Length: 62
Image (cartoon, rainbow, N blue to C red):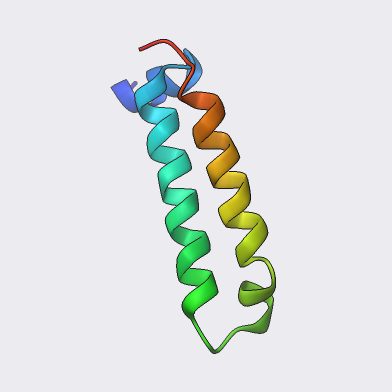
């Protein structure tokens, strides 16, 4: 099993921060694209979930 999967299962900070950062980036891309209305509609909640997730996982142990 890879270190990333082990880190996710052990609630380590690094892998979870990576997931939260990717979620924030996906939300921003969804916000800036002009073609798909459902993506634009859910972009704010996706970015918000990623931000709250990042705040929470920043308290996990390394």
